Image (cartoon, rainbow, N blue to C red; front, side):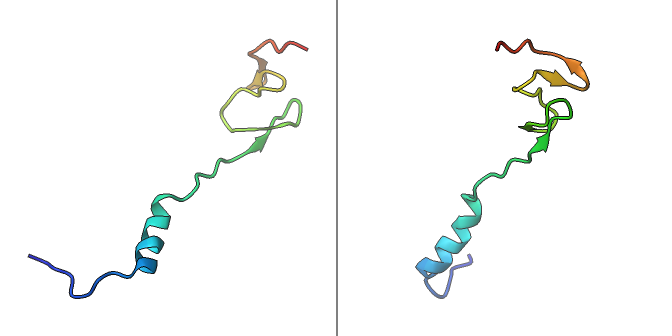
Length: 60
């Protein structure tokens, strides 16, 4: 059975675990109708448009 010869240092442990707990980045595009930032392939929450059509009625 494989057994480590040396104890893994705390800094190496934290460096390895940092990749697991890395913050998730979200891509952002602009709405072609109103120009507000939005996530791609989602309805714009500012104007309610998606794919050139009005999907949601946004109250003023």
